[in-house]
Image (tube, rainbow, N blue to C red; front, side):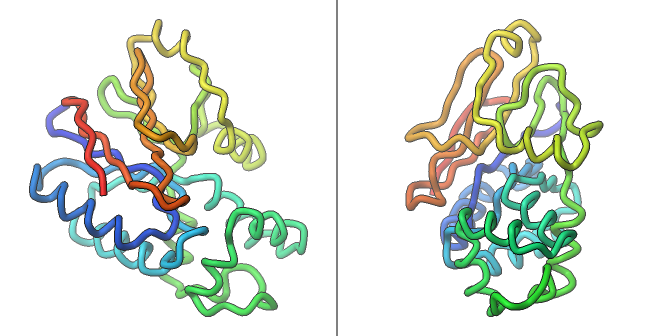
Length: 218
């Protein structure tokens, strides 16, 4: 790896924590690459501000990687189907907070309540990212599975997975970096790094610095 990487866990509408963490990381290593592990929206009160900050960051640092989370996958499925069932699923994810922040009444269909730039952001999210010995994916990914080849339904299943298969990653000499599984402290094990520390539930937002394996919080 030619530069360091900061991988940032699930944000869930916590714009204040995101801004504080980004300020801290910029002071540590302004040249490091940023990888966001998905779940930018829902639960927290400021999903729109989070997306605005990420869009600005994409302009400032074009090499930034934005991955899809299961919340974004569900949002895109609703945008495609416009079905009450898919909207109901989103509501169980804390989608009302996102609607309130965007000012979108429940009766509107799909992503029409969002600015066009925001809709494009969600539709262009990457499924996964690899760099050096690291594999970045939103959730614990079974070793050997290619998210790029998955159907939309299969991808949603992978993005929602919480089962951590440690042995195969340990034997692979690669390290999976993931979010999605909220933990009180980051997970570190041979072949595995988990960085969702529950920002969506009022706890801290975490980034891991690689390859140094240092954790930073806000």
